[in-house]
Amino acid sequence: MSTIEIVPLRAFNDNYVWTLVSGGNAAVVDPGEAAPVLEFLRDRKLALTAILNTHHHADHVGGNEELLRHFKVPVYGPHDERIASVSRRLREGERFTLDGIGIELSVLEIPAHTRSHIAFVGAELLFCGDTLFACGCGRIFEGTPAQMHASLAKLATLPDNTRVYCGHEYTVANIRFGQAVEAANPLLAGWAREAAAQRERNEPTLPSTIGREKAANPFMRCAEPGVVASASHRAGRPLADAVSVLAEIREWKNNF
Ligand code: ZN
Ligand code: FE
Image (tube, rainbow, N blue to C red; front, side, top):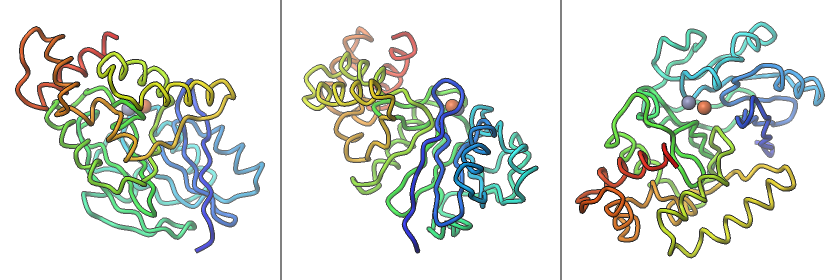
């Protein structure tokens, strides 16, 4: 297996189409738009070999059809008819070798942002769409706080050095929220400076790592005393369990 380069292609305002490149091949994760992908493939003289979709939202799948007009490639995604172009529908624990890239990926079902949301993990890489963000999590559109808690807990079992490639550049605002929730967390100030400097240079703040998320992301720290205390303070009553804490801080973030 030759080395793999992971390129962030920008789409819309703040989406990333994570692109895995090996030799003359490229596979894309969540191509909400085709144009930046086609331009990149042309510039680098690469062939598209696969499309991966984490969930059905248009900003993650909107480029599928146009890419498929140029390249007949497999589309890996969830069991969800709302993404008509998926050719390989995958469930928890299923594995496949990524066409043209050669790494083995396995599938994690991580519902809550949407009911069929999946992640792809392998070779110490995690592509997690809109479920886990750097220092944050996705909005709960089709699930429950309990599902989001379980999905994040599942991701937390991955090795600490797993690199986290999420769907959006939300890190700076998420860290600001993290500081509101857990002011005493010593990691947040340094991360805030680092992320602000990266954005200043117009660089992505990603990937993050699972180790960093476990240490700093309030949504992965819903049993930590500092997070429980500030969620309880906002709720105006003591919150007894991590799911209630997650529900409260998700609601807080929605209005932050
Ligand atoms: Zn989404
Ligand atoms: Fe999205």
